[in-house]
Image (cartoon, rainbow, N blue to C red; front, side):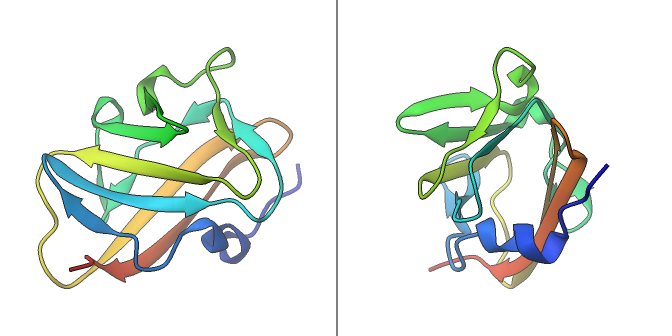
Length: 122
């Protein structure tokens, strides 16, 4: 099965978008690589620790869905040139750099993922 290198997927992350919000933290992805979708989400990680799937959501065009609801019928879409906000409920991030990881299952590719390191925006 072909693999998509993490260094290419890392370009999905909008640098500087990592921020604390009420009830947790979030970041933005913008797809300039090619349309696609995931049929399964794996836990987002922050500094090596999993965020429970029900605590993580994605928002596209005003519609929000929990990662644990993603399946063959309810996919995680990655439309071209559109922004997707990934939110994690729970503790806010402390000041300083954080390593965030994201993995998902894409038909035809299997499990793919990437990580990035950024600091919480002011």
